[in-house]
Length: 330
Image 1 (spheres, helix red, strand yellow):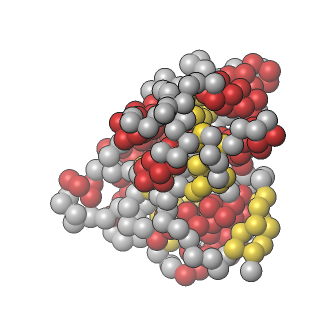
Image 2 (cartoon, one colour; image 1 turned 60 degrees about the vertical axis):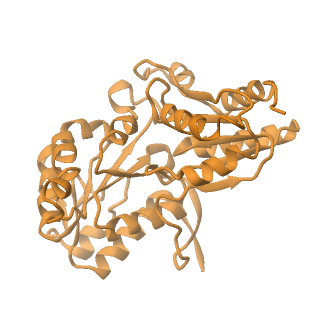
């Protein structure tokens, strides 16, 4: 039976379910306990499980992420919340040099059942230092898996799967999604955590997006449908690994490809997606893949300037129109 939950509630339910079922699961981070989390994700868990399993930490990201690494090495299942992805820059030593590498460097003697949750993205006048998208940095770290849930259902599924996994998994949550509501079936069997979702069928072009941009891509596809342009929308759900099988299958059908990301276009996730799909689908692509991404500048504080610094629905619509005017292959 499905419940209508906000994104943050789905994450909260997932934490509660895993903590109730496994005493080795605990949460740590800034303001996760008494305050209930900056975005309410840990609300109520301190009262239910106590301070030993819901640990408020000092403002010391590398230290408490490192503590999570050590706990994972001895068989616990820590869930580290870094208050925003911007602050993860202070934790890269623990995350990149330890969490991502210890299983390999120990020859498999140590596992790394560590989950690191990070809210991020451009979220309404938070200025340059609090509006970053660092998936491009994390994608380039062997040993990390990266999930990007966009719906409350995926938030419920992917966080639970991450906690149960023996790998180090980063969950990137967009700050503007926390209040979004949707149906969540708490009993449904989840797809594999890395499997992309086909959000809309189409025959004229494929739009590949992730995180909040996957929602905007679906809005744009609805507008395009009214103009007679049928767009297929793929929500990646995972950035490492990427579900290339579904992407290739889709691109080989419409033969036009638009990639949308909030991150800066230069050297972003879209560049990897475009390069790999060009290699695998070159023989059927009617035109070069079109990439739509954020501008290559720090995010402005001013709301109007902020809005034009990242793709909006109208930008996706116009990019799709532009792509549709490219000549089709024979």
